[in-house]
Image (cartoon, rainbow, N blue to C red; front, side, top):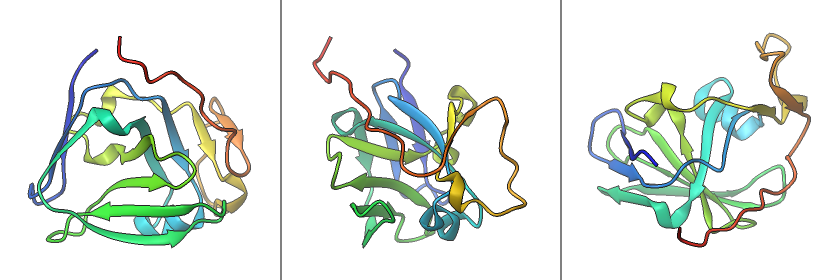
Length: 143
């Protein structure tokens, strides 16, 4: 299991992942589009496998799914870094673009495609889900 490192644009927030992603998705919900002016590529990791060094600010809102979302970002440069859903507190979403090696993961699906703009380039080889995908089930028992 490789350790993945990442940081915000200014380097004020650094992080380390010590578990493989549970899911890697491109999200086209309107919230992600507001964050990135496009879809966002995200990995979902066990919250316990994420070590964060540096202060983060946060914004809490209600997503289209109805879940409360806690989004964390760098207070200095504004880089969007992490998100947590009230529906799955045991998982944290990490923005793939903040990884030191974003090529170390590959998306497997596009989600919230019903919200994607007509000009969006959706990879036809990836699964397409119109809204929220079904829940991820996995064991978080240490190996």
